[in-house]
Amino acid sequence: MHINNEDQAREAIALWRTDPARAQLKNLRLAQESLELSQMYYEQKDNEQGQARAAACLRIIGSRLAEIENE
Image (cartoon, rainbow, N blue to C red; front, top):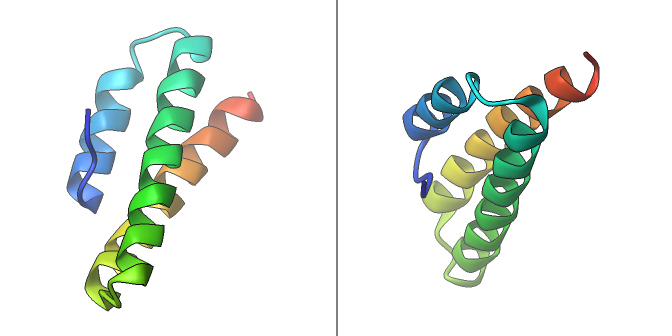
């Protein structure tokens, strides 16, 4: 699932919640990597809105990662 905005990040997390923790971690890390690449792309293009969107999604994904890792 490609995540382009905060709503999609929340939807992806909601879908993945039914998966085992290891599968969730894998999906979250893949999403995180993809978002980091998107953020770098937006930085190169001087697209501040894109950077902000990617950063917001990364915070959401990071928060869920932390929740799972602390369980």
